[in-house]
Amino acid sequence: MSNAGVIIAGAAETDEIGRLPNKSTLGLHIEAARNAVADAGLTMKDIDGIATVSAPGPVQVAHALGIYPDWVDGTGVGGTSFLLHVRHAAAAIRAGYAKTVLITHGESGRSRVGAPPFRGDPSSPAGQFEAPYGTLGPTTTFTIPLLRYMKSYGLTPEQLAYVAVAQRQWAAKNPRAMFRDIITVSDVLSSRLVAYPFHLLECCLVTDGGGALVVTSADRAADFPKPPVHVIGTGEASETPMISQMLDFTESQMFRQAGQRAFAEAGITTADVDHLMIYDAFAHVPIYGLEALGFVKKGEAGPFIAEGNTEPGGSLPLNTNGGGLSYTHTGMYGMFAIQEGVRQIRGEAAAQVSNPSISVVLGNGGMFATCGVLVLGKNPR
Amino acid sequence: MPVPTPETQPYWDGAAAGELRIQRCVDCGEPYFYPRPLCPSCGSSNVEWFTASGDATLYSYVINHRPAPGFEEEGPYAIAVVQLAEGPRMMTSLVGVPATPEALVLDMPLRVTFEQRGDISLPVFTPAPVEVAQ
Image 1 (cartoon, each protein chain N blue to C red):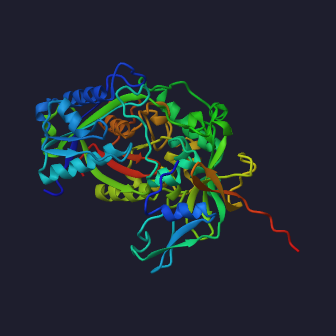
Image 2: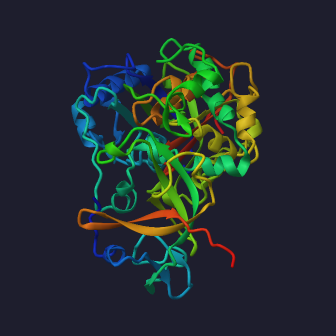
């Protein structure tokens, strides 16, 4: 039983994403849940496990949906939480704790309707040892490692800018993407400085939206209307609650740690990967991700992207929905990265890659704080 | 404004006295930051406070163009991470130097100084004085 297969049987986003001032955070959870359960051909009565992030959290979401679950997971470790939920759900299903788990995300990240206020705890380590220096969220913290990377490996401002250029090429093919106009390196470098060396177009969007997944055992794969997406490898890791304490500013240990776990479980190497999603809150994160997962050596990811390898027509399709930089970014983007991996394996993506068998999704939480990696397959392991 | 906890109070008391006090493990000798009652290298609870040299180098930074509350007057300002001569890294502000890429060169030598913010003395860093050969 311990190796029994697990699948994603239902996956959907909210009807719309972007600017949705008429929907609350909880409302977005409910809409995403309804769509994902319908996508699986099920009803809420079929759901016996729930996972999501606070606020509103799994108790509120389950109750709002009329679900009284046998299994509850409120793991809240930032934008990658939903990848961890999939991993935890797989374990729960194998253990017999639940049969059909619903994982939801909804966030009024832009409109802030029914959304919890941002607040820091001034007595926490980050409140004592980072906030006094004028940090203001991810733009001032997630970004800090990059200058050290640039000095160590010679990454140029133009190569960093090209990450946004490449992803916009994917977004241009996706009617749901918020930004779809083709851009150039010059456009990126002439957008305003947010936090040197990062320009506006190298920072993710802030949007409203949601998504949800239904996870169950692979022996039920024939029971659902959509082709199964097999969860063939998973990994998770945490590194640091404060960017200043990241072990090495030129690499993400936790990306590597979680990636190695997931690849080993799936029994794959980078050569087996047909499609890749790397959480891109900022343009440098795909660079760190490509190197940590071993697709390229350290220092090579910037040139690899700038040479066109990850854009439409390239050898390694990356962030094919347009990513957090161009598609959407509610605040906890990981759910959208999983959704695109599922769509690609099912063959229903807006910018569909040619018949992918394996999609890898790397999620980041906080500022290089937590990581989840999923290996999704068209076939069982 | 930071709110000290019992485990971090010696750090803030040190700053009020014009000293950068951090911790090290008595058993394995490893210095570490941020303050906590357990050595992150070997797990020992046998740890002690000491006064760091105050010497550091610039490890990485950003220049923030969207000021946080309380920083509106400053114009673009640097948020830096420095590497202490003893090894640990910490976030800080850079003072006595323009917040420009030209002035802020990675690995430049820095020296701790202290700024009073309300009731708190806050460690910040400034370019180290250039030593003139005799």
